[in-house]
Amino acid sequence: ASIEAAEDLFGTCSAEAIETAAAWAAVGVGFPFDPQEVYILDVLSPATACDLHNETVSIRLFYNGCDTLLQANDTISVAYRFDGGTIEQMDYILQNDWNGGDSLIVDFTVPVDASALGNHTLNCWVKYGSGAGNYTDSIMNYTFTTLLQQNINVGMRSITAPVSECHLSPAEPVTVKFAFFGCDYLPAGTSVDLKYRVNSGTIITETCVLTNDLNPGEEIAYTFNQTFDGTADGTYTIDAWTAFAPDTMTANDAFLNYKIKNIEALDTDTLGFEETNALDYVLIKTKPHSNVLIKTQAHAPGSTKGLLMTGGNAMSYIDMLELPTGFNTWQINEFLSAKAIFCVDATQWNTCYLKFDLKQTHGGTLYSQYIGGVPEDYRVASNLRILANTTQIGGTYNPTTPGSDPFVTHLINLNTYAGTDFNLTFETRNISKDTTILLPVILDNAYIDNVHFFPGPDAADDTAGVNNQWPGVISVLDNDNHHNVAQLKTTIISPPQHGNAGVNATQAITYTPDAGFTGYDTLQYKCCYSTDTTICDQATLVIRVYSGMSADSHSGFFALKLFPNPFSESFHIEAGCREETHAVITVSDMLGKEILSNEVQMNPGINLISADLSGQPSGIYFIAIKTSSDSVVLKANKN
Image 1 (cartoon, rainbow, N blue to C red):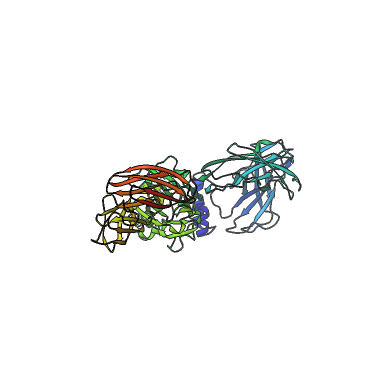
Image 2: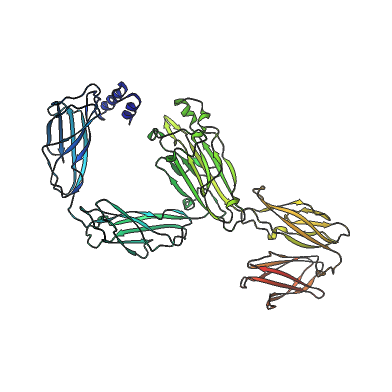
């Protein structure tokens, strides 16, 4: 590669190219450069084939012609050794003048006996001038294979589908590639049986009928009609093989242990990468020159491991590399793409958010020493972006300093994708992984930790009854949903018009009506996560203020509330009594059928009564509460 680079930069016959070739030759690699040199480009025959016998050795030569052409009748000396045997030397006489840059095919007059089945080896040499020895170029250990004459060998080459993915379907098709390894061809119309199984389960057999002749080495892709269910989370192992009836050469029939994953959704758990099963929740996709690894150096404060996303050894692809401008980052260097893909099941969420910790580094300190400029010029060597499905969310993340940026917690609003299954991808195109020049050098990295997908809280409107003689305490969070993300914090955002309200230590709202007021009052509140106070939902609380103990149908109670409403399995009644009260609570359906009936003894203050209707169908239910002096009917809706 270094000789080719010198030739590209300075010319084929330049002093720089000659010096580079001489340096390699000095350490035993190749030959010194000669400006009037003949080289071997390749061996043309023999080549792998069936039923070989006495075969001609043919080589292609190249003349660089830096000084002058070679003239007709000049002599080129060539030689070969077959399978470690005697060296066969031959002087080839040029039939015509040979110009620099032209190639020439030379056939040896002495053939090789390649009739033995199996692999064979050829070494070839060349020089300008006659006689054996002192050769100036060679091709060593060229190999070919003599195959058995047959037309029965069919083998499985690969399984190409399905691949690891989020949300595999209940009907995943399996696609395989098989090939013909015979000597002539399989004619169109030939039937080839193909088989596969998943997780050592039932063997599926189908027949592929060739629509065209199948020549040696040609592949055919076949997709089985019978699919498999890939919806369960975890790893699937697929085996596939050919079952061509005449084929007795079975060594290449099977392609085994092809593994794919149906990546698990994270739900509302935070993924730190210390977990032994962390890779069950992330799909890694890299190119040959990019890397994604779980490493200790990538951990955020408070954890021990994180996800490292980086490039490769830049010297191995320096000729392909483009330094981004900051505007073309995602249009170039696709061979450096690294992706960490998360499967998000937000189908039951009204809102959706992502939090993660990120630190980035760049190799500007090193690059500026060797390329020029200042370290800050190379911030664009380290790039990260976020994709929801295939749409980029926000801009490109770049580090500020080469290595001293702190971890930063980022919060991303993904509400557009709430109610759906979607993929969230972290993608990097980082120029180079860390290297060692005397001491370790940190280059272009993204460190990701504590990945957390979650919905925002859901606040539900509330109603409550309050006697105008006493303050009422309304537990508004009882029918609000925190999705097991964090505790909720209540804040009043629009105060009542006919009283005063505040939030107590339990996050309930205490409401005190104005003196003499009866009727309806309203306020608005928001509930926020205690850990992320910018993520909130809001609701309205309607308060009916009454006087005396017989106001409307709530005469025996100073507070009465049913929640949640609607409910899925059970509901609760919060009843506030001034004195000890005996009550009968009856639940009936829309047709008046009594579902359950219980007697309860309620004490002065707030009483909590629960009813389980998990065995009942969805619909409207009426809850009658009867005391010695009162009768109240509430309505509830079961989902």
